[in-house]
Length: 252
Image (cartoon, rainbow, N blue to C red; front, side, top):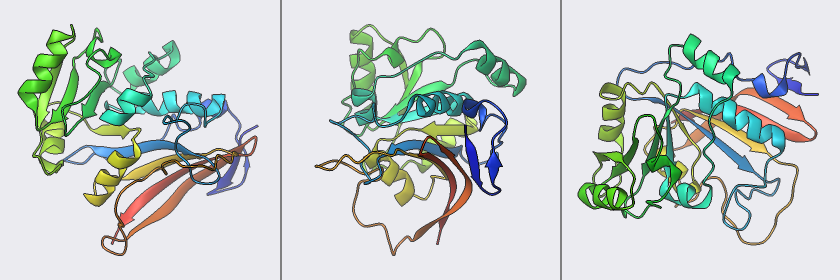
């Protein structure tokens, strides 16, 4: 049983995996609306042995697929593509929801890399639908390596300082990406927050204690007090002691 705790309290009446299917996001004119989906242990760890796989429950994995189905594009950091090569196609009912929302059957897959080092044999470079996009300052190098490995991609150039503002405008205008999902990793999430372009966070808090060394969901130098980031909880659910939080980021 999935229980809603906020903004109201009570048992969720439908399939727990469907809980976010009917939500809507704003459409911004200048860039995609960006939302993140992450999982963390109770003691704050975002990875086990270098990957997020294994932290969340089976329901967490189902909800991840449903959140992916809301997006026009999915943007991953290169480290996440290396560590978690999980690319699944949607079941029929999610495809039908995408069609009713006027979306393509599959979101556009994307990866951002400053070094140009991505797993060129990754499944995202061999998808039958639209070719993956790579956001990188090393455009020619990445393109050549992907083709050499038998894949295909398109490249959106970003400056070497990691600024994403121009690239995000290109995603919105040239590729019609309205709603953009990222699943990290922690360093990329930090970059989005530092540039004040991450709009919402979906966080699964797993009822597990990991301890040891390991990254949190956001890794980087101190963000607060400049810029200070606060969160507004929009939804909070509980299932088998696992918490599912949806919050809006507020930059001050």
